[in-house]
Length: 303
Ligand SMILES: C[S@@+](CC[C@H](N)C(=O)[O-])C[C@H]1O[C@@H](n2cnc3c(N)ncnc32)[C@H](O)[C@@H]1O
Image: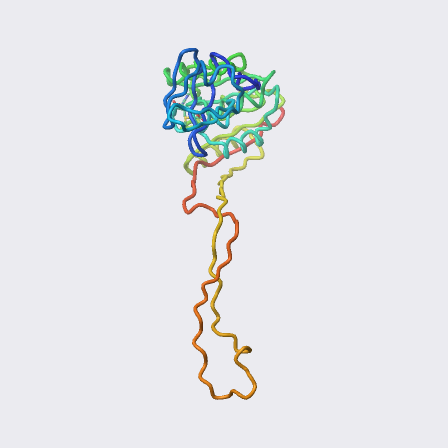
């Protein structure tokens, strides 16, 4: 198992994703002799996991069952232990495309935070690219480096424990793309420019507040960045459900009453109409996740 390469069978030392239902999943470090408690009962790693195929349905001790899935950045994002706010897949998908990331890309990122975005970047740039990620909080930097090792992607990433606004990314003239998710991104724009290759590259900054965006755009323009554009992406999920709609009751049919010879008869009382149609459809949920942040993209031109 690795986050950038698929394997068929679950092995000792893997990180597997236990999928409980469509809104809850948990990562499990697979270990001979270990057990994991779920709401459906215990999973015994030696018998229930090791040697089984990824995607298997595993019956837990209370008779309930779960699916055990191969890890992906998307599943990691919905199951990882939060140490910070994280980026979710809707923003990550847009960032990956707009930064033009591909196998072999060299990327700089700060802050690393909980590593949600980092895992997606690593999967995209593997097997030949590299991620230089900067996190000034020491425990967060150490923890994420540990996770990269457990997920067998540490050969693709360098974690630096420093302040990106003061000390930059630790590399100059090597990056195809730079991503910023810090409270004062405008203070890191100069370092982003220095980290990008001489023949140019792309930059993205994620900020929740429009005032942060304004300051960042001003500095990007001052530093000679072009194609500056800010956007927001909102996801609308639809639930599939079967609904029943009552048919409208328009009262008795006047044509049915127009019998020849019967003129002055009082109208028949309308029979209550209880008929309905049942159909399968999709409905958006009543509550929808709203604003996450603005994504500001820009291009450093060839110098
Ligand atoms: C919101 S989190 C990033 C989340 C990350 N994008 C993810 O998807 O998991 C912001 C991180 O930036 C770090 N940070 C803030 N300012 C920084 C700076 N000047 N240099 C380095 N790291 C910084 C914080 O410690 C925090 O861990």
